[in-house]
Amino acid sequence: MNNPAAHPSVVRESLNSVSLFKWGVATFFLVWTLLNLHESMLENIAHDALPYMESYDYKFVSEGRWINFALFDVLRLTPAIMAATLCNLFIFIFGYRVASEIRSDRWLAFCFALLVVNVPYFTMLFKWPMTLIPGTFFLAFFSFIRARYSRPVILLTSGIVLFATYPAFYFLIPLLFIRQLSEENFRSLIQFFCLWIAGYVLGYAVANLSVYGYTLFQNGQGHFIEFVSWRKSTPSADISGIIANIGKSAANFERNARYLAELSPLFYVPAAITLVWALKNHLKYTLVALLVVFSIYASVIPLGVKVPLRSGVTLPLGITMLVLLVPRFWWRTLLLVTLFIPFAWQMHQYNYGYNEKRILFTEMITEHDIHGYLQQPQQFRQITVAVDEAKTSAYFYRLTGSDAFKNLSNLRLHYIKPYLYQYGWKDKNIIVKNVSREQVRGDAKIEKQGDELLISID
Image (cartoon, rainbow, N blue to C red; front, top):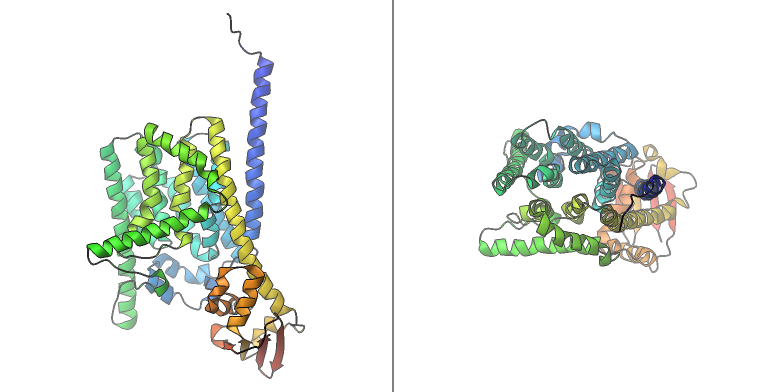
């Protein structure tokens, strides 16, 4: 039986339907992304962001990010919205370039880049937008120059500069080479990963040497990076220490995975099916993606450093790389959509909760500031805030359900002081007194006493 070719009009109609569908998906991604970005910039400065810091010295000696240290005076003056916009733009460029290197499909590259922008950990990081400008810029920069220089140059250079800006981004660099690596032999793959590790070691060494040189020059006695207490560093000195740190890293990874699956683990079923297929049909590509996923957790095992949730960018980006591997349009689109929805939803949820708590606190404080004293720090020698930290934290916990208020110091450090910082109050002029109240109703009284401003939270 003859099988005549389809009529040209039928083919055109089919192509138009696919094109319309693609535009619909791209529009859906773009609109949701713009709404998320708008929401993320409403209250987008963390309590210890650069504009609130008088010096970067302490951050530098505890992290070794010498490029951020060198650019401190410039970065801290960058408007918050401009800084956040630049960070998101650089991340978009990085995602677009990664996709374009693997598949020459502009629609796919555009949607993939929007998917990357909606990775919730980026919006967490961009609450410190000025700090992240150099790191995101270098991610975009290396995505452009990848083909112009040899792998040793790219890996060693990126190791140095990314450890000097934001180290977690260094573990994303192999994504720029994943297509080429998937087409080479295993010997080439091993050589690449040896260079990748060398870049990590070099970056960490240069960061430590920069701290040692600075502290030696400043204090006459040098020392290397000294991690802050919240990083919970537990350097391993023997096998039992290594095993304990492996368990610690595994727990950090599990927390990351549970967070991403909070909306529903079912959204990741297509990705899991694709992973099984990819391991069988594209082993080297998949191995690179998996090594990227686990790299940041493996890298901290010797020092036992805690990997905060916001640094776990390797897991979601490793998962997204499966999208670019799939040859069939409809399955690829299914992957895009089923990953975009939980990522974008988590981005919205994080920003909604972040904004809600600060807006509630702002409304409580400003309701009775009829003279606008809070925005006139130049008129006062100091400001004193009297608050029952336990009862007030419990009050906000009842309103928001946020675990942030279970830590009593958060009220002072993350809400009271940052609210005042934004109007120019200096930390040394802010006094927070913990006083006992019979009941907290969420009222704030503001009183001027000479050159002192008093706030009483009841």
